[in-house]
Length: 91
Image 1 (cartoon, rainbow, N blue to C red):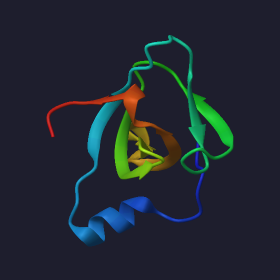
Image 2 (cartoon, rainbow, N blue to C red):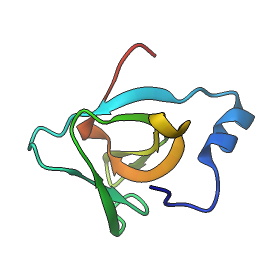
Image 3 (cartoon, helix red, strand yellow):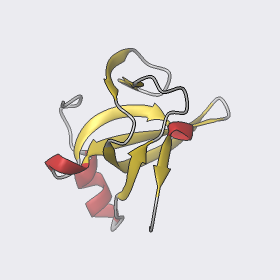
Image 4 (cartoon, rainbow, N blue to C red):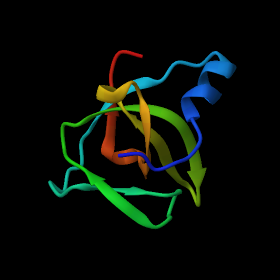
């Protein structure tokens, strides 16, 4: 699912950064809301165990948010999720 008309991957590549590979790990067991921006409108959901890449990070109101991409689609941007419900390994 594509949420944005621009590529956060291009921004990462220009900065020499590498996207971190992670998995959705929402302890509530419900699908994780995907938003247009941190605290923004909900535009979709992700299921536990889904592989995502972290493309960008932001702190908003003392809470961490991450802009994630779909690992299966070459890190194609998906949207913003609450960082606490994403677990990253090995990077």
